[in-house]
Image (cartoon, rainbow, N blue to C red; front, side, top):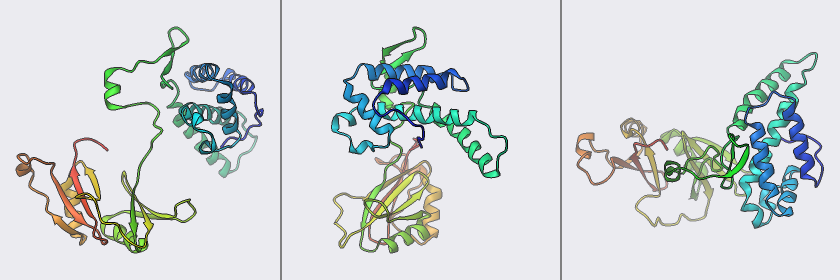
Length: 280
């Protein structure tokens, strides 16, 4: 959370504050390059781009900004990431004469969080990157491998969730908890109240609906796993209805589709568990 008293409209003064904190030391070696990259990108944009950044710095949600601000949201994310990082560095630099156990734990957690902020430092931003050899901001030309796999040091998308309309979300949540090993969280304070189901990297949102729409595809959810055999036996032992058995590994080598099995949940949804060699 940002807590410093920043100027309302002058982003250059904010950059001066950043530079002052960096000059005191105790920061990542790439912090200065990150500041230069962000500063240069703002300098190349219309003045309103900086004004939108200042609005976000003072707490305006990005979703409330106009579409032209949404187009450069990665820049605002990195700007706020740098601001929060430097605030934490400043806070850690001041060591009180005596610390309670709670304060010690708070400082410890703050120190651990610095590494997460630093992951973005040096990553390309809006097609540009800081060149450490020339100390200039250059156009970034990703290599062929990174273009193909879409990899980046900064992930703006963290996870996704399938949305299941349910006549009785609580009943469905209990089935997924008791039979499929998911953990449920009831989120009634969100814009769309729902029950969030989580297991490993799979997230499902259950929402209340008077009717459940008929599926338009063979399956309503596909879950990719590296080795389906263990999960198959776990779900079968848990009483889950198996619609399509898991074929033997040797037999599946000649099959035209992935090795998979299909289950049915308490609402009649068909869920495919498919083998994938990739980590998803």
